[in-house]
Image (cartoon, rainbow over all chains, first blue to last red; front, top):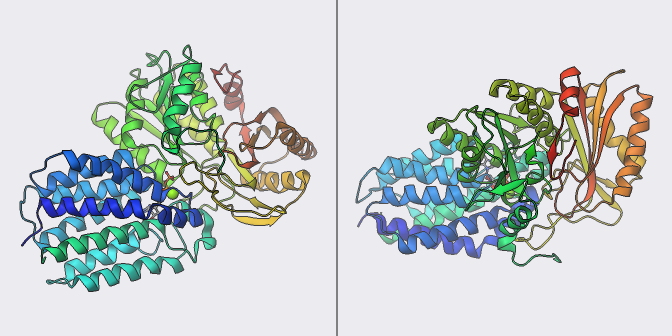
Length: 207
Length: 331
Ligand SMILES: Nc1ncnc2c1ncn2[C@@H]1O[C@H](COP(=O)(O)OP(=O)(O)OP(=O)(O)O)[C@@H](O)[C@H]1O
Ligand SMILES: [Mg+2]
């Protein structure tokens, strides 16, 4: 089986549920080193996206991703809105009109997302941002012809937790300087959840 | 949490609606958005100026929409940068053919969202320039980080850029004077108590009765340093010292002073702070052209204040003195 528009939809619907559940947790992470709105932003944006997905019809994963990106761009706000919005728009652009997406194609599309994130946010590895999860995650997907999704989930968890020891160089947390050490980056946590839900859906279709 | 609201989800739209309802002669809302523009927008033949950011900083930025200051203000969710589509609507609504200047406070979210809006506007053939305000002396500037934040001093950027735009100056000239203000502007803030985002339901940080935070921003976030609470004079000295050093102020410089309340500080306390500020500046032979005291850029119900100094020259002085007629700032 392959990754089709149905899997893409399932991923985002599941992700919405998780972000609603984890809204307070993500905001608490952001209260520690930011302004406390990350969970609220993600929950608001994905709730809107979920509403859209319930009614809209998409023929390809690309169309769905592009539209999802536009919704996130206009509903999330903050730093994470343009970042996650860009990520989905770029992935959609890379997939063109493929009906069935292979693991390689998915990895390549997410690589384009990552490039978009880097261009938009100008952050680098170890700046204590979502990129600290994205960079190793995409590398893993590209380097493993057959992905062990449990390994993948373990990796993203580790990388998310690894942001705890870092001093923030980008985003609001950077204003705290050394006081940002000792806390998980909220964007890294929301990206971790994004990849875990992706892994679950991919496992489900034996990708 | 104890707040005079109806629903945390709708605070921004209800606030904007109430604001617009109060001042129909001065402002209007772009339908379907949280964008407020001058009642006579777009003003033909004048550079449009748009600012904005998260809500919770009232009267910023909607209060500065009007003759001699902003043409449009975009209100995001509380403490959250507005989205590109909203900023784009503001740009379109104020473009009078001479282009639009975006006044952006230096936060990752604001910069990215406004940049994306500028890209959309350029596709539509609207000329856009951006000025990034980073007046917060609390944060170190470094090439590896995002650098200093934009806080209360932003209001003086609105004032001066707005005054020049009113004379019919070009987009490049208005952007240049805005950048000149930024280069001569410095602010330092402190907090006695935190603020609570309605949707979060609890304060951004906790602080003991006998403590204060120095170097706070305007988003309920902790500052750069926590210390024991000090007297108004001591606090004024700490903040002023930082700002004076940041600007490398010298004898015989002329400045404008802003003592800004963060939302829950009585004017009385702000006057007490200014009592110290004005006498220290006098001792330093720095002359004060004008002092602004009040709530210009708040952080919901945070108690505390910030001190802003703007170094003036001939051009900036004249523009500072020029007429302005907005809801929260009149000259
Ligand atoms: N330059 C950047 N590149 C990549 N990720 C970033 C960057 N800046 C911030 N982030 C991510 O965004 C997360 C914060 O998102 P959030 O939704 O809280 O926005 P915000 O910073 O509060 O925005 P705003 O300043 O408008 O309120 C951080 O935890 C970090 O992972
Ligand atoms: Mg935040």
